[in-house]
Image 1 (cartoon, rainbow, N blue to C red):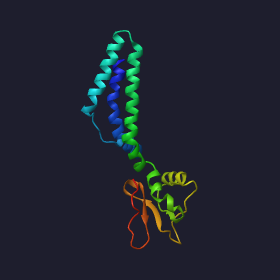
Image 2: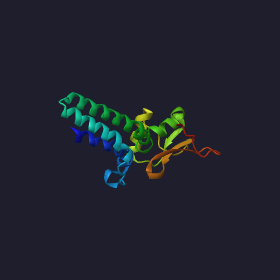
Image 3: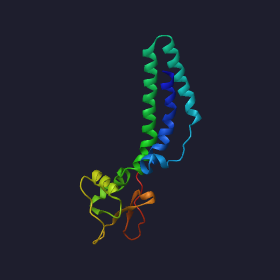
Image 4: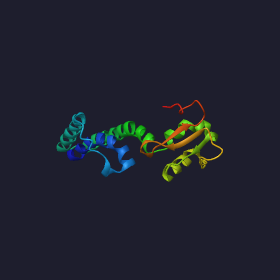
Length: 161
């Protein structure tokens, strides 16, 4: 039972590597290391589970591990999901341009990013061509799409956080 609780120490590691693993693949992720700050609460839960199991109170042990796992899931959601929106989902770029959807076209982004953009837009966005639209979605660093203004005097769309 305590060994199951000890696995909770991996939650911060998972939260840290998840966005890069989804973008580039798990084998290409640089080692994140185990954050030592995570060991104290995990050790406390593991000790509680061990003591409860030893005292014949398995339900308490399982409850403690379950509560800690729920906290771990919430931790991953709070720390990794915002990064996922910017690295493996077109949601962030779509939120920047959604209110001006009729002025948006899509440049040379990969097919998977185009599908993601079409999902959030509700209908396929047109390809950039003639006539040019004032907002173009183009590949950025790491091929993650970014919105660019093509109107004179404007360099980019303001970030909406």
